[in-house]
Image: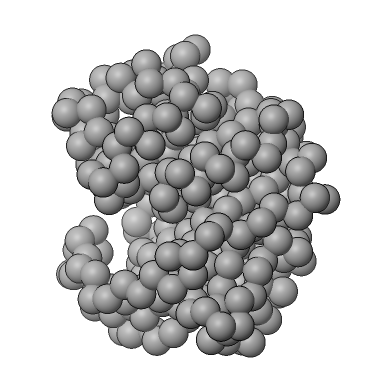
Length: 305
């Protein structure tokens, strides 16, 4: 079933305790698309500037299930760029710079041939942009969005308007508390459901994720830390969402049990992202390796078929 994603495509510079990567392909849309492509074909709607490196297009093209017909290259504009530094525990980081570039311009257009997409993921960007894109898909089956603390602070009303049009929200535990003023993740998620969506996935980093749905609650542990080396956490949340939505689109399912299972596929897929800078971790893996790691995760987490 057709899956579409929109969000940022950027040029990232990342410092971690393990090393540094300069001007690598990044952005919420890029990580999501790469991760979801192992499970389902994915259509990209995004924009880059004339400074976008040709090597970044080659990276995208290395994932055979990614369609880039919705990627606009604006020759007279600048690509979104971000730089950040992670601290020793990898759970904390500081932003060194942000260059909005094309994000200050009108959003990209949705190609006519994309408008039959049934599974829509609105990766992190301004909620007005997310809502405008969503309007192109009146016959969608599942629409899910990610957000961040910035939009909760400066675009709260627009965010609430978006929530009323969504089926699901992916959000981290700190953002859920910020949005609802409730510290308990499950209670906060239930409050968010009152705002419109039928389910909320609360990401808790090294402590896994929680699914709160109209039909139940489920928890998913993180991938065991002793089975992997964390090199760069950038994009892990977007990769988690990509694995999750890619699985749902591949099964053409959006019921509680399918969403619960999708969290496991999201967790396993994102574990490869953590092991290298940028998209290298996903670029250097295969569907078979993801399936093999899933078997290990099922055993460790006692997850059934």
